Length: 333
Length: 224
Image 1 (cartoon, chains in turn cyan, yellow):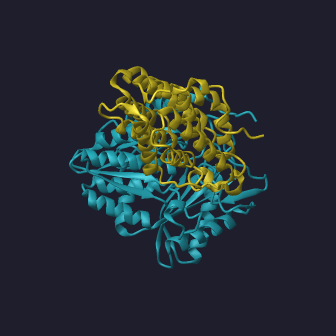
Image 2: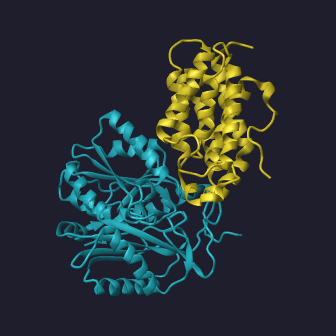
Image 3: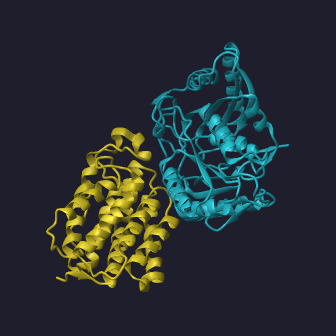
């Protein structure tokens, strides 16, 4: 099957997309050798730095969130593939400062491998770094072992909250504790409707029949809980939110952050319609949405579907979420 | 047959690995597109290019340094899990080849075991998990069981044969790591691409010091 994408050399996808990204947002980010996306205006060294890593092909994630109030450095790998340990170690060295670095890692085999090896190098070098692993996917069940729970879109509000705490001058221990509190209170469930193609190989990532959707699909087409017939927006919203609420233990009176993250080919129209379904479901249970974001934050090429994210919020987390930031893909004035 | 290897033999081993990987890259990609996302062949080619570059830059520094530099270059060049794992294997080999000892059987076996241990430490996979370790751990066991006076070439033959058998056995295994983990029974009948790569690399090492073996049977039987 022919792949329909506007590309040039498939082996240079990452280089070319980073070049264009840096050009489009040259007032905020620049790209260094080793595919390190950094802030043009560095954060003061007496504030905690935030570093992350991940494969390309998920734009605007992850590098679209480098900038004031969020990430300091994002290390970019090949399409859907983690960067190797050397550039990650380079990023940790470059970020190193008296205030220390919070190193946010999404739970995917390659990312964890590179991150752990880079951490071993950082420790040998005496760098001040604390690692935080996001693993909020509940497709395998909320009680599944950590290794079976992938890091999905939840990293992005976590960058925002940890980044705001860092900008506020909180210590590494405090930034880590706040981020970890958010991490423990968040959950994501994905649903897929149509496959994406791998832009370098042209391979279809998975197969779904025309009348089917699959809840629990990962961001590389990893299998979920099995296909089912397509449901309405309201039914899908209720089905997914029920599992999310159970996972984070949210009950009447709780305040939630809700994110509907489009996978790449699902329209904003659909996402807004789904959001209404979420609101109805939560209203019936006396649960309030106090923070909300709808759009494409972490995509999977032209996959159709979305990730539904929910987190229990408290006053401090909410204030950090609402604090100013300026990045290519998220700005709070 | 010589009882020791020269520094040039290590270059020949690395080049042998490069040649074997290049010859079978399309096969690796095919296996990975059945069970992963289809980029393993490309990642291995990239890794072997990085190895060749490291040979060009560091051959004069001796096998230990050359292997360490090659491992670092592979980690930098190849993405996903392939680069870090293969890189740690080469760096683990390099770390044991220090000092001025002659590269005799025990030293060569220790170097391979150093590489295998280093990768094992990072990968944490065991036999039966359908990973690179399914080729490498049997290779280490085969060298452990070899006669104490086995030559380096004989040890590499034993290691390559055990790795090929180990890689072939992955056809009956479910995956416990990476993206293939979610495919369940769909991986059965196909060899793991990573285990196949490691079997090819050990076959390349063997061929590098025993050129007569080149052109012999494929280390991993092709599937129909």
